[in-house]
Image (cartoon, rainbow, N blue to C red; front, side, top):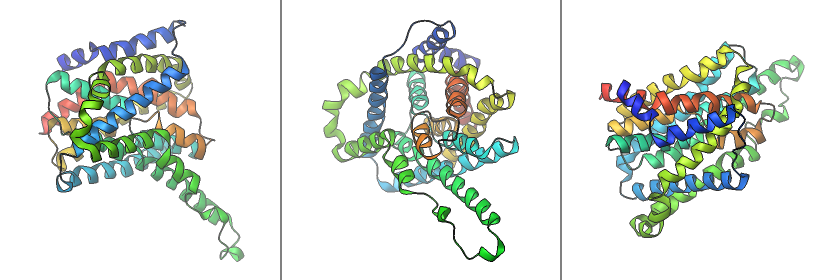
Length: 335
């Protein structure tokens, strides 16, 4: 275990992430132009999506239905557990929902780092796991927003005088069109699903055109993206500290809980060692692209410094340094 953690710490993606954190802590003038940061995000989304689609084209629906159902199960269960934990520690409802959506959804970059870890270790994994990434991005966001509406509607119903019980509040519309649009057609999910579909339709015919940019250069672009993420994470660390030790502990131990659940689900649906590891990584990660975009529109009262600060400042580096090798060792022990 120690050797694996050391190897992961000494990988270029982790070291450049740490470099970004150091730059932020010491107030360096290093920064990424907004347009470049956006371009790197778009690149990673397309690269993961199209590779997933190409790989998925090699499999029949019968061979992937189990992992797909496992992914949907995790996307439903993890936000419910997160909301329960947040209510136990007396977090207000809106910020609890923000964390439920963030920790129920997944981090594409953590997944990319896990792939780099497996490739470096020579561990094979199912090619359709790139497609599972897409499936786990959106359900938790929808479930979290649904939970918010259900809880708010329950409170409203309890506040209605008994003589007006037959009156249905206008707010009983569980999820409005804007919520659905943002959850399904936000840029991250649109690019992931769209690229996945293109890769699925074209299959191997797409490889000659996409390989030079979206496959051969993937690791190098990931280094640039993680350097930028390190800068952002370092800037947000003080924001997380303001909310106390309970949130910091949540940001470190919840990934282990969900990651363990993900590994067991991966084993249950018949994934290989590498596939179960990736399922654990996905379940244990937290979103800082799709979920924050949806929350900004649907739950503006939720404080971004809490859900973004915790996801980027605590859980992301924790998974990058400790979580990935732990999920791998757990999967190896189980399988």
